[in-house]
Length: 136
Image (cartoon, rainbow, N blue to C red; front, side, top):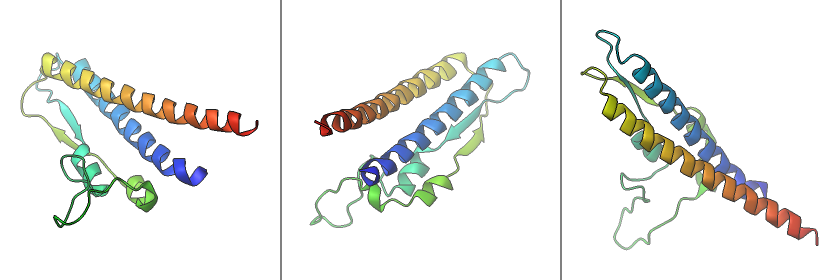
């Protein structure tokens, strides 16, 4: 059973960590909104993560030939080392901190983080149910 869930949990956990890092970065931008000549920092990881997972920009598996059937992500085939060595890209903005833009980024990131937390909770509660009912 461990082999089924562990790769998905590790991947979800890593993405949640990256989202938390982004949240902290945006909060730092907001904290420096009044600082003269401060340029907001950005953390980009979605495209690099999709590339590391073998996904195209739409989030689906890339098909190299029209005759191929669409595939679903196979966590068993994903090598954990690539995820552990994965590093997000940090950039500095050109303009001063824009409160509306930072708040929009903050809200989007919060929504995506909460979605991942809900998925993780659902997976673990489903596994808990299987374990509890398996003993009957």
